Length: 269
Length: 160
Image (cartoon, rainbow over all chains, first blue to last red; front, side, top):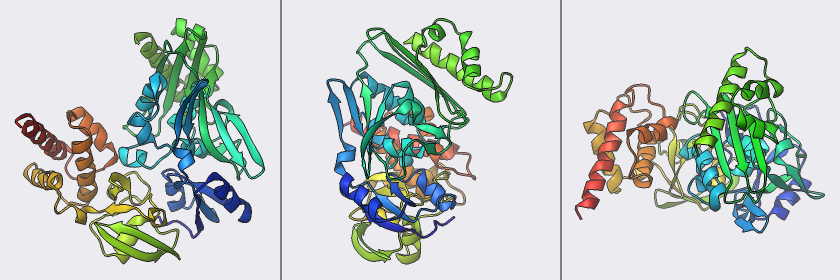
């Protein structure tokens, strides 16, 4: 239960972090809060040659409202989001989600971008950011690009990000003041990774109604037009089947129940 | 080995660590602060919970090298803290510990609950304690101890 040996560099800017990556070898990894990477290191499931610590990069902790929506720094902690770092109705929704992540001691260090880059399919931000149609601002050694949260995850702990690419911020579209959100996750103990996740985001002003089925074997399943699903609870089973779950299985059942409960929560709002 | 400068329980510490060394190992093995206990070493049990820059953290998931410039407070660093004194008393009174292995982490989490959530009821206290495992007490005494300190602080604040 002790981590293997690795090198360590502390970056104070995104440029410096990328420079450390470029001058090292490809087995280097970025370290943010370390709350997911830490266990993997201690269990020796991860064996990076070097960790590039990005916790001291101020730019990653900024959170700004723009005319188009919100930009949340990748280094903002779950605890900061729980305590209201993100403004507006979306921020209030994110605060509820953040409160349900692991435990306060973990939330004090774990970060939004770190969780997304780690890409555990059962992690809350993976599903939430796909639900909210977020884009990840990503910077690598050769340039920058945007990656839709919806298509970030390729499988458990596997993403579309190249090894040198660092998540800098998460960009959320401008959900209107009339937008309503709901989320339901099933886990046996508070703070555990979820067995099933489901959420709805409904913005009548923009004519957007999205749903997500999370804690799958890989990428969360996004239903971009979820009005039908919102209208009829019975549609939940078919949506979970379409997401790849085998009808009659425990996983199918628990995801269908989560989806129905998320729907009920949205309607109750 | 890399240089590390940080503060532990108010005292400046200058040392060298291997990047792989987590904070709990540095505190226990080198600084001989053995009040921080290690249980699972992957962030689940909460035994190693201490304070980094005023907020609870898992010392098994905190690499010592990342604590450059940080203020670390272990269970040995709360002797003069009135909230911790009240919690120690309450833990004793409500039989909130038996073997004591979880207690340092439990107390640090309890103190955070008392200060951050002065309105916490029993359900909220239990939810907040989900990240600290106790295999002796069944939590009843721990929850009562924390609730009693919250109640005492609230009545003291109300009577002022």
